[in-house]
Image (cartoon, rainbow, N blue to C red):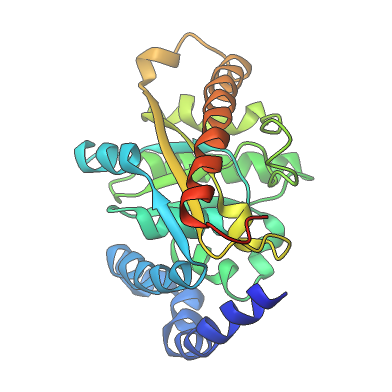
Length: 262
């Protein structure tokens, strides 16, 4: 609980000010403002928010990738999901604009929901197949458009409730359809550690977060596969890497927090 009080005291006044200054008007009419401008505005705020959670970043391979990738191509990024901080962390560490596919319920969240609207994100209704199909058709169009944006999808559909003791949750194969249809490159990535920063039951002062670039799949690599096969392949890559991340996480927790490790 103390962790949340400390974070709230740090960022709540900032969020209230920013909410009325630009988050609210930008989210009501995002097309009024250039996408690049919207992303930079959001990123500047998110970096401050992430800092309040005492996160220590380990993402050298991911940074190396985004520094070398073709800026004229849109990527669809598939990653495991651990916390509401995952999309915010991606925003804070990106050098080019990113947006997200989020579950429908998040649209009502006063902060994260409006941020996703500002970034032209999509909200997915898994209970309605027609609406879900329409959502992923919109994703395909955005990936094929001239607007430079990478789109992040969490194929588990929900965050892992017990990340330290369980494997990555199973993937929804249908989420990979947009990668096939858009023919855009697929970035497979993994994340670990955000759950600790956002959960009050962990008391460590510093929170290591590892964001790992695993592999890029070009359309030629997956064109003869169906969505089930792509999903299984991506799952194996991510789950194997998360196992490595757990070992890495233990080492960094000991290094960063010499006392009060939970």
